[in-house]
Image 1 (spheres, rainbow, N blue to C red):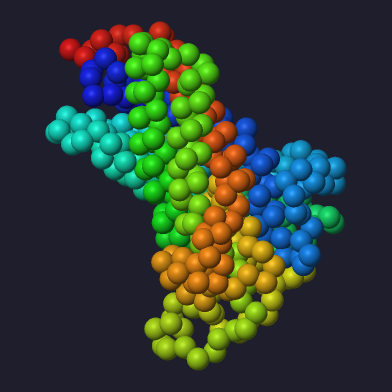
Image 2 (image 1 turned 45 degrees about the horizontal axis):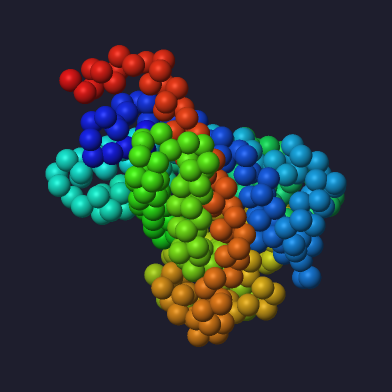
Length: 367
């Protein structure tokens, strides 16, 4: 069974797709959460030289000093709270829009690409706020963490949400929304377009809709990994914009720019004191708020003064070349491949199980 198809036989009920997508996506995210925590620490590490460098040593350091629940799995609760409803919305929107476009005669690849784009757009309303909470708790670790000073010190998920809303405003829960969409919308679009095509090739190769576990895992991992590599330049720009702290504040602004600066964290904001672990008045810190974000800006990398994806791409290319666009492409490929393979394999497995448990819904749908 594919994720869906042009024929009625390959189309599970929408409810089945949403349930399977929610469970599969959440399970995949939880399995990869510890890796995401390590990458968040590497991205948000304010120390020079950085405390967390290589993937293996960072894993071991966090596990040894902080443990699993408060260390490697810090921020798991908001991650799960955002992942399940987000993937439910994604798969529901994806299946609905894809089927309608196919029925109206839209070319298959365009249908898959557009449906992935729309699905992630619908899900972003849920997952961006949860990612803000998750990422800050991942970076912080446990409360009063003696091993890593991140600039945050929340007691838990509820305290983090209350503190952010009270001190920074409700809009801060959507910090980085625009930059997240610039990266995640094309990622999801390419991921599912490639996945659908790889599934089609695998079915032709096997001569059956049941392609087996190895090919199920391979097609999902290939789709996610290839999409992750292709969108790596957008990931680099997004991470740079959200993690950099300007060393030289800019004070000459227009009135409009000042008004924008007062509303949220802007890269060339007026002078303000640097955050420290003991700061009690504000816990604002421009960090990455969405996974998989695996670009690691090297110490001394040029600051992106403009809050613009395209100007950022040009600036990185001028100063670092094509290699700057693909910084961190290896870890990003690993993250997206494993997470996508697990999620889509579980999606197909749960769909088949739901069809066995509730076959009457499928028969009614196809009448």
